[in-house]
Length: 97
Image (tube, rainbow, N blue to C red; front, side, top):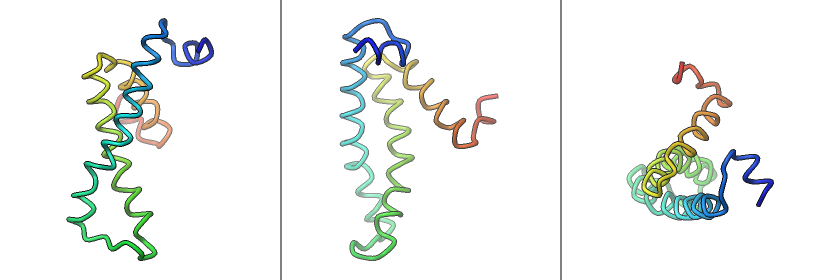
């Protein structure tokens, strides 16, 4: 736990538990929310492009939802900073300058 607290820059074990809960809820919920999008786009399971396309659809849904759910649980600052770091690594850092 200490290692995670140091890495993430947080102070309490309760905050770690809340963050882990947010990760778990967001993972499941983003797949659930992306399902109608996948059906709307018309992806057919069993085709060679199904899984790459599904991942490309779920990824942005997850990124948005983690900030929203993090805010609901009072951890907006942590997840917003994490998203900025991820987007900067992807070459989209100019969005935050």
